[in-house]
Image (cartoon, rainbow, N blue to C red):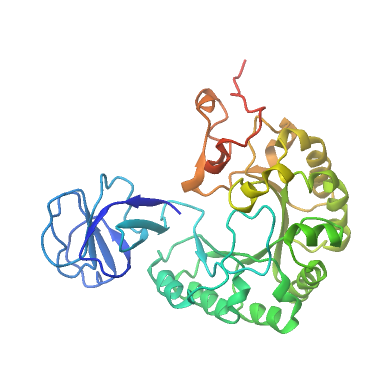
Length: 373
């Protein structure tokens, strides 16, 4: 998540609020954080103020930052006791997500966010966060960790989104294991959300290979979870992170998906983010994305020609063959999306997904600026 570091005064606990960029009187500002570069104190009614003034006064929460240019009316931020301002919802972004939990029942070798074992229940905080998010939000993700580990509280989050953001689509990222319990899958269906998709990562058509990659013997539970979700007519997406241990069988895996999960709404092939566990296991899993273009092309063709909507996430257009450009999507969160200096002269930069900030040292050697003749 995007963070800005500042100097705080009078903050003894975290402050969660919606950004307001105009100091004006209105009745419902008790959940608002005023952003005013000229403010020297926190006006009555606001829960905190963010300013550029180094000399501040008063006994109410205030944070001094270098610039307020990153703040937009309607953003939702958390200010902690260190003076760090963490953006939890950005009104201009299409990549906003609720982190249901940092716990997980998998230990994937390429996971960019290794799970924790114990944590305080985040649900009360997340319910409050959802209530602050703009009512016209188009899409909200629910992710983790593994969101289903919070049990039925997951459905409380979904219902809260239905209440406060009735237009928003929901993308639920889950390993699918919990949905092997038919009653749990039925509870998701009973939420009756108008546009919810469960995105489930699977990494091989061979059970032992998938289990080794995720660090748990759960392949058949994930498969059963997919069938249960389909039974209750839930939208399903399959995600495949491509790396050295998954790329060789992409065509066979695509064929397996078509024959066993023809009901899925989409399949996405993801370029790897090289941080967390991926960084620790980099020698075992890194491969230049250019080197698996042949397998990726064949897999995409197998699915696309059979009517399954197919995407490629996190890839650079110059690394892909032009035949795959129509499938490429910009799926990297704004706050960790970047480009190499040589990309500045590229004619395709606006269309390209760029690369993860963490991939500065591990990226394709075939990245080149595209120039029209």
